[in-house]
Structures are given as structure tokens and as C-alpha cells.
Figure 1: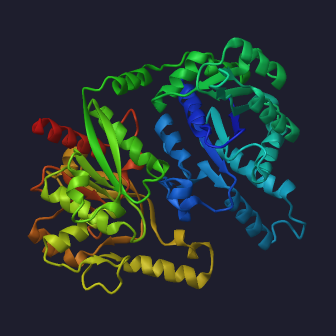
Figure 2 (figure 1 turned 30 degrees about the vertical axis):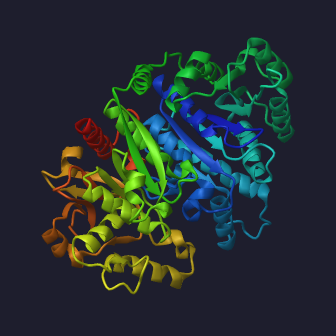
Length: 549
């Protein structure tokens, strides 16, 4: 069976949940025994989201091969249980950059370079590349970012319009996600926004095969028939995408609607029943926890929870692995001082300090870590969170009161965190070349790297193995000149790069659970397979709460 292509577009307004819809459909098709991949096409001009403000864009998700991508790829991985790569995300910026590069190299033989066909051809090449594997997937789901009617989305929509003719109508399916709002004043569901959105899509030359209606409540059959009539789709091709309390209920909700069955019929996919018992068990575990724990997430992007999307989900996964509900208490690190830390953190069962860039809010993170260390509260530091734990330990335990990171104070007497020489060299070479690597995304340690775990450590007990592969996104590292001093003062370095040159995990053996890691374990957590460190962290928080009661 050749690869089938499913295109997911959105209308009316943004943030309707195309990523979750695409992921849930992928999960259903995979549960039917099919191999599935998903690709996100983003219309913004940034080459990737790596330099974008998390408060504007949300988190940057990192793949094993070092791609900085849209957060929807996190949904794809969590729902499908398979790793994504740089092939699974493309932006308008990356596509235009590639076309311009080819033009500069003379690939177009002096021809006039235009949006059609050159940009649309590059978009199509990216889509079709999903099938260029030794074992091509049975289905490739392509999510088009933005909203129908946006100027920047037009080249992508034109490309998928062309693809239907290029690869055959029977191998393509267009799904349009739209909004059916409920007006409480009149007590009515309104279909007009959906009709206008589909009309906009039709004006581009794309006829949706399926309409997925985001709504607060189930859409009655008479309204589905009305939408089908006015939007020129089959009567059984209009589905409700009802709001749910738990995002992992969405695949089950779609299954009950018959969504995957209609997709299978239209694409002539094998007639198999979806095996959804793992999803039902997951939802049941979430709905029937045996206990609750409260975790403080101390960061500086707390105004937008999407900035910590994978982190949020990984903590929830860790709770599921312990039969515990996790209540997340987001704390702005800029509000924490030595005087306020106790009042702000007294009632939590665990403290997590996530990654980030820049000095803003760092002193508050350090105060939160000091509180966790001194009061024996389970602590988990990730990336910058680990570095802040090192700085706190240096100042308050190792006798280095002026210790800091070179990122924050290049003149600090004790730079316990520093920019490694090899990263200096990478950036200097990039600047001399004046190529794409000279931007801020070109001098980071990105992607999956191995880490050797010390036997008997907290990390080893969590992982249960001596070597792991974890994803990184950082420029600064622990300064090995301080290894001997820190060991003497009681810090353990339980995770190192295989050659022993880079510190990956730090611990405090005399603490119930105190661990910092330079990598981002949240990117590899899965609802069916919680990440070992998050499972262990929530387990420690649960134990603390139970021992105090």
C-alpha cells in the first residue's frame, strides 16, 4: 500500500487544536495497525522557532537529530510513541531560505524564481519526503499551521491543492477543523462561522472531505446535516470535536464519533478495529488517582503555560505512573526572594526549576533551590535549573559566595558554569563564515547525546540502566575545574558524557531527592511510558506528602 496523505487545515480562529486533532487521528490509525507519521508546516518566516520568545510562541521542542521545532511535534511524539525528526517540521522561512539558496547556486538556470512553482514545489518536496524511507509509512498526516484566509498560509494551501492532482485523489484526504460556537444568550450552536471558513477554503480550490467541528457540546444530527449540505460534504463526514477535561480522551472521543472509520473508508485503508485498551486504561488511571501531590514549577515564562507544554505533560505522566494526580503550581521566579521563598513554597510537595535563557528571574530560582535543599523538599532541576542548583550549592555550601554563570556575569570570580571552549570555537567559525550557523541557534548543543549513569545513584535507580540517550538544548556547561571541590562538599556527579568530559547529572546524596540534569528529559516522556526521572520525582513528592500526614 502506498502512503496516503491526510491534510489538516484550520479555520475561523487559531488555537482550535489542529495539533491535538492530527495527533489523535494518528493515534487511532496506529491503533488500527498502520504505520503513521505527522508533519507540521508553519507559515511564519522564522527559519525555526529556536530564537522566538516562549511567551509568544510557546516551548521549542527538540528532536533527537537536533531540530528546534514547533511544540506540536511534542504532541505527535506523545500520541504516536515514535520519535520525530527535522523532516517532520518545516517553516516558511526554511522553505524560502532553501529556494533562495538554490537560486544563488544557479539551480534554476537563470529563470525567474516565483512563489508558484518554486516555493510550492519545495513545499511539496518536503511533504513527499515523508515517504522516502526504507519502509514508507501507511499514512502521513500534514498539519498546516495558521488559519485559512491568512496571507502567509496561501503557498501551503496552494501546494496541497496541487498535490491532490500530483499523487491522485484517492491517496489524499482534506480535513478541515473549524469552530461551531455556542451562544449562551440564545442557547444555540451557530454553524455560520464554519460555512464561511469552508467557503474561504473552496475559493482556494480545496474541497474538504471531512469537517471536524470544535465545540463545547455534541453537535446534534440536524446541525451536522445542515453543515454537510452547505459545505458540500457527505452527511456522515461531519464530526464533533468536543472540549474534554483530559487531552488524552480525544482519541477515544473521535473513535466514538466514528472519525477514524470514515477516514479509513475514504482512503481505502485496511478494515481493522482500533485497539484502544491502553488509551482507556490511561484515561481511567487519570480519572481515578489514589493520591494528589502539588508541584511548584518555578520559572519566568509562567504567564503562558504553553511555554512549558512538554514539562507539564511529563509531570502528569509521572503522576500517572504513581497513581497520583499532579496539581501544578506555577510560580514566577521574579517574585521569589530570600524573604518570600518560604511563604511561597511551604505547601508544595516538590519543586521543579525548568530550563530557560537569560538572567531574568535567576536569583529567584536560586532562592527556590536553596529552600528545597535546606528543607529536604524533593527538587528537580532541568538545564538552567541544574545550573542554578550548581550556583546555589557553590554560594551556600562550597564557600564561593560570588559564584555565578559566565552567561550572567562574565567577570565573576568563580564561573562555575561556563561556555565551553569548543562552543566558543563553533561560534567563532560560524561568524567568520557569515552563514546560517552564525545566528543564535548555531552555537548550541542540540539533540540526543549519550549519558553514562553511576551505579547506585538516584539517577541509576530511576533509569535502571548504565547509559541513556537524552536531548539537549544549551550553550553552557558545568566548569570541571570545580569538580574536586564540589565532590568534597557533598555533591555527586552521577551522570557524565561517556568520555567523562561533560557533567550531565548532579545529585545531593544526603537529600531525600535532589537531582539536576543538563538535558531535557521532558521531551522523551510519553503518557504510556512516563520518563523515569519524572516518575521518580513524583514518587518522591508523593512519599514526602504521605510521611508528613
